Amino acid sequence: MHICERFRTFARFWHLSILVMASNNKVATAMAALAKDTVIYGLSSIIGKFLNWLLVPLYTFVLAQQSDYGIVTNLYAWTALLLVILTYGMETGFFRFATKEGEKPNAVYTTALTSLFVTSSIFAVVVCLFSHPIAAWLGYQGHEEFISLLAIVVAMDAFASIPFAYLRYKKQAIRFAFLKLLFVFLNIVFNIFFLVICPKIADASWISWWYNPAYGVGYVFVANILATGIQTLCLIPAITAEKYAFSGALLKRMLRYSLPLLVLGVAGIMNQTIDRIIFPFLYQGGDAQTQLGIYGACFKVAMVMMMFTQAFRYAYEPFVFGQYKDKNSVNAYADAMKYYIIFSYLILLGMIIYLDLLKYIIASSYWEGLKVVPIVLWTYIFQGVYFNLSFWYKLTDQTKWGAYFSLIGLCITVIIQVLFVPRFGYMASAASSLVCFFLIMLLSYFIGKRHLAIPYDLKRIGLYTVITIALLGVYYGIRQFVTNSWGMMGIGTVIVLIYCAIIYKLDLYVFRHRRSNGTSSAH
Image (cartoon, rainbow, N blue to C red; front, top):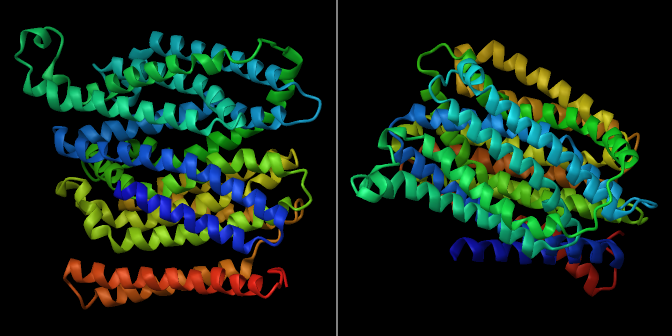
């Protein structure tokens, strides 16, 4: 309840600030709607991610060794990449064409659904047939079933992306949230059952004939396929909600729009996961899987920032396409960017300051990797800003630019990985993502200015950036002289309160004063 209450407080604060800051009533209404959807999507996302987050301590404390978590980290990085390939931009394509004048939403939906069903089914069958050579190439000989299980999971997830997009399009946020949380709940239950309960009752006659205690990490993937299968069955009402109307001509137009997003998506997800995919091939300092396990666990500690970014994305994507025809839409986009950055910095400060407490969610044998957490947090911020900026080429149907940026970022990431991972290990992996998203964020901003002028409040954003860096500098400076963790967290709390006071002074109090005097905030 404590987590939920903190999120509700944050949501009310954001909602109030949006209403106060918007330059006119129309923008205020649009931004308030965005805040409302973000609360629903965000609350489900943050609860779901938080509950999934609890699997990290389970894995680090229960799995036999760090290299086992390295297997989980490596294979789930592959599944993230494959999921993007199998959806090939159709999720965004669905939103674009379902809201496009002259198109029939039901035809758009069922056409996209059919396309993904066919391609996902083919993928699952092919991978299962060739699981032996694939497992050998990845270094998992003798565990070919890991590959088959995850192939089926990825196929079901790819297919389910369109029904979930449909729920967002229909503004069925509560249903969307319930089904997402259902998967999380089932996945946790199955993990606890296989990894905690079964080992304690392994000698019981009803379980001993099928449960193998030595299978260990394999039950992580068994739990996943069971939870995903149940979630897919629960999506059947959404899958069959529209009258079937497949159109080959429509599919060609959708693919023409979406396929550049595939290049963008593949390069983008590789920028996020390539470190965990190629690390075992590059690292030369010892047991690569053990080091990857440490890196993967500490990477998860920074997930709070990703929770916020994803929650914002769920609400923001349909909002952007829906508001595009409004002449005031660019003001709403600019406000959304500013508030995203303001609250991202708040999360950054909190995560760094309370890291001495957060580290206890993982086993102490993983703590040596905590130094990557601040780097990962900044990476998530740059990634979120880049996502906000990316709508200029989506709205102007110039998705090729997204592909260019992502390919540039991928080249930067791979070069840094190849050059420095063999020497510096996972620190180079974390740094490569940071550099990648920082550079493509800048490229997207400067090139986007020429195609879709959005009046971002750069002065205020820059001011908050300087303030955040200064407060972090103060925190690290004091930390050199204060060795007590609880004392530092107390000092850090004061720093967080100072930042909140600055938000109130700069972005709430001033505009509330202007409104009370009948002065527009635009003056």
